[in-house]
Length: 339
Image (cartoon, rainbow, N blue to C red; front, side, top):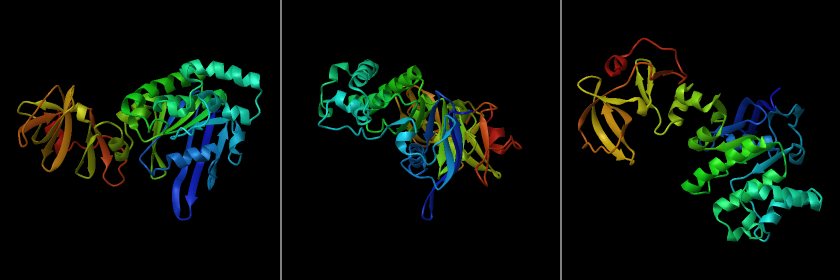
């Protein structure tokens, strides 16, 4: 039996369907990312799991118990929000223990849990400070510590790193994943950032317009996208998608290479130098294609370049519904582009 089981979960606001009959499961100790663009229904799904929104339809089961209509405090979970939600007049220690105090946990037990968590999140030296004296990363650690001291087996996180700068986000990704593994938490993590989802999660559920586009391991979404939406969302830069002969051909930028005299004849649109590599955009018969070359390259606009890729690196999708296809009859793109 799965630790978390969601079946047919739906949320309607009058005529708007925010979440459209989604179903998924999570095993105990698993880190699951709900990924997708703004408005796809990921945060609404999380609010229903937390009991902060009532589902229009469907069921939610935690560890064999149906909690669909249970109050938030009866679900055995903790939450970490996008905003730190810290009390500015309370110290770090008081903020961490606020929930336990409200639940009338004994003073000795509260202090014991505080001692345990301070070293876990690296806040011992800041325990008496107020939130206004902390950095953004330290405030997020306070929010994490508050979730950890509850000792709830399930932790829901709603874009907890979006207010941090890039360097801090990288550091906190590592810290959160390490804490989750050490404590054995079952985590449902909402994010719009594919890097967070792909680097942190055991499994990624990609949502689009309230529906699940694909549910699988990060490498499955990358190597075998089930739709053009997944192909265009996962990967940086995303997969090149080219409509051709009643299908859509997909090829990852990192799989395209320069060739001498063979392959597709293209002309340079732009070169974007990133330091370790250069992202080059070229035009092929009105199709813009992107690929990556190691090092510094600066080709003037209009420079002719021939490109190609190896057999087996292409993907095929229906031009009708965007879903993945089995290998079709080879198109003229493949006969020209294969190495």
